[in-house]
Length: 50
Image (cartoon, one colour):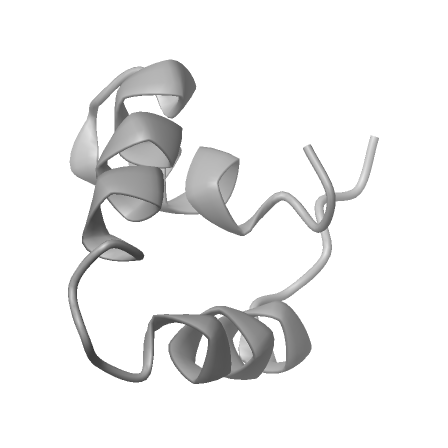
């Protein structure tokens, strides 16, 4: 919704975007570099052309 990272990963893995977003939010409860990984993916993932 913000950068399309979860939607892009969901499309790549054949999942629903809402499921990937929920998994990301749940993973934020655990310690780790989730936000850093999200920002890196935001930068390196190609934008979607319409």
